[in-house]
Amino acid sequence: MIRKRKGEEKFFKMLMVVAIGIVLVSMGGILIAVMYRGLSSLSLSMFFQTPKGGYYLGKEGGIANAILGSLLLAGGASILSLCISVPVAFALQKEFLPSGISKVSRLSLDILWGVPSIVFGAFVFIIMRYLGLRASLLGGIVVLSFIMIPILTRAVDEVIRMVPSELKEVAYAMGATRFETTRAVVLRQVTPGIVMGLMLAFGRGIGDAASILFTAGYTDYLPRSLLEPVASLPLAVFFMINTPLREVQNRAYAAAFVLLVIVLSASLLSRFMSHRLSKNIIK
Image (cartoon, rainbow, N blue to C red; front, side):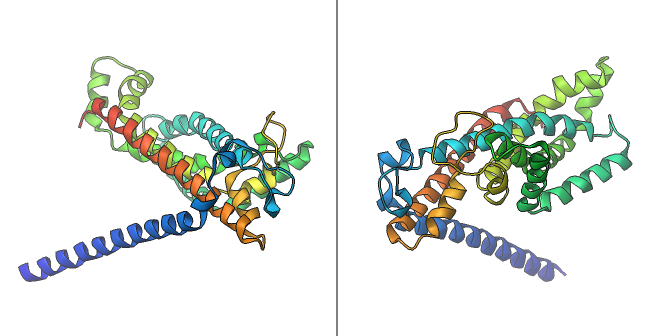
């Protein structure tokens, strides 16, 4: 029996090592491929200039419009989804809702998490057409919020459920109301988890192309209004990679590298902030 358990332990340890190896090799392969094809096309003009005439045919210009557009889209959607997801996640707890409603709500959020982004894009596009609106930065923010809300809500919900019940009981024993306990005790404990969940949602939103193709559109100009079309890095990569010119394809890899750097930088920043905030956690 002991040998059998040790054999099972070694087997699952090996599976974990293999899984970690697959993740690291895949990530390394993506970075190497993108850097190999894209580093030669990186330049200052790429970051600070918008596309000139014929940029997608190899002429001069840059992708400043797509970089700024992606940051505005993902940043705006992150703020909007955060304002909605955190209250919803707290409302799903047993102190505020019956368990039956909470279970149905969690199941609905899990289903929404798995819905393809293009479906969200088509749904918001239909609403925009009904309201007489055209593709715009606002439309892109709204559709990305639809994608990010289930992710962030479930992430925050799971973190809240991990808070020791003893902390709440102590607060109740001291005369605190449910709202006061949630605001002063629980929220303080789950802040690092909220930061990590927000990063997960941000990475999902900034890399999406299908939904914003319908709702945000694309333009070679910098965004000036919420009601004007806006460019994005995923769509810039899509348009450039489909050209027959190798030089323009290399620019697509360079744009993909910029997108990866943004996501990795945001991930490192969130881990740093989560580590700083975790000092307030009572375990």
